Length: 184
Image (cartoon, rainbow, N blue to C red; front, top):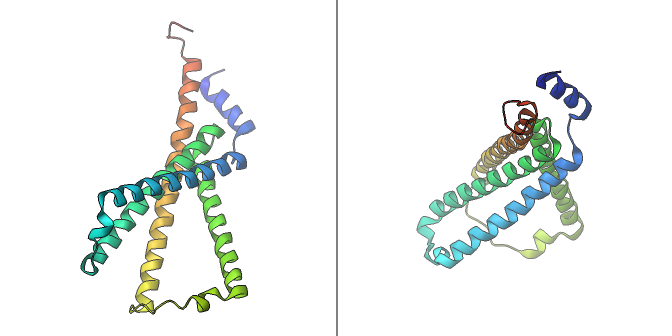
C-alpha cells in the first residue's frame, strides 16, 4: 500500500468540514482580532498619534486605519483557518471557508439582533447625534466597496490558513512512509 492510497482512504473516512474545528478556528480569529486591535490601540496611544490628528489629515488617518484593520482581520482569519486546518487533518481549504462562514453567519445574526433591538428601543432617535455633512450616497458606495474588500481578503486569508494548517499533516504522512531515514 502506498502513501497516496492510504491518504485517499483516510480522507474518505475522515474528510469533510469539521464543525467543531471550524468553530474553534472562528473563536481563534475573534481572539486574535481582540488581541491585535488592543496592541495597535496601545501603540497608537503610547506614541501619541491620536493627539496629532487634525481636521486636515482625517482622510489620511482614515485610510491608514482601514489598512491596519484589514491587516488585523487578515492575520486573524489566517490564524483561524490554520487552527481549523490543523485540527481537521483533511480539506484545509474547506475548513478555512467554514471558519469564514462562521464569522459571516454570526455577524449577520448580530446585525439582525441589533436591528430588532433598535426597533424595540428606538435608541438611534433618543441619542440625537449631530448630522454629518456627507452625502449618504458617497458613504453607501464607500461602505459597500469596503465590505467587499474585507469579505474577499478575510476569505482568502482563512483559506490560506486552512491550507497551511493541513500542510503539517502532509509532512507527518510523508515521514511515515520515508524509509531512508535512520529511524525507520
